[in-house]
Image (cartoon, rainbow, N blue to C red; front, side, top):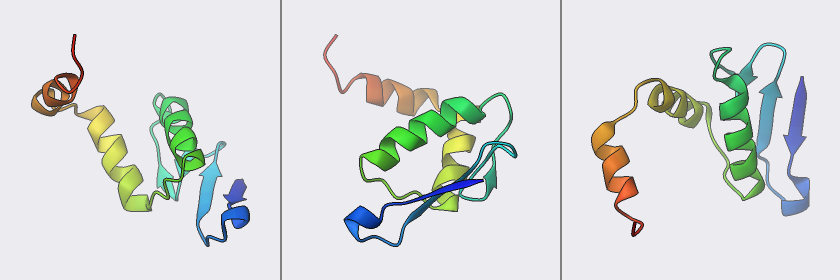
Length: 80
């Protein structure tokens, strides 16, 4: 299990990832979704996001059950 501590930013946040058990922040991610979610979360952590276990749970639920209304609202933010 690897943990990454962003000490260079003087933060107590730890990005807790267990690639063997497919867990992020202690949350078990379905095998077929793990790497897609892991890379997405990892990039955002590098940008400063400090996700909690609850954030990861919400993300997994959102990936598993998309909200077409919210997706449309997001898509409408950018001109076509």
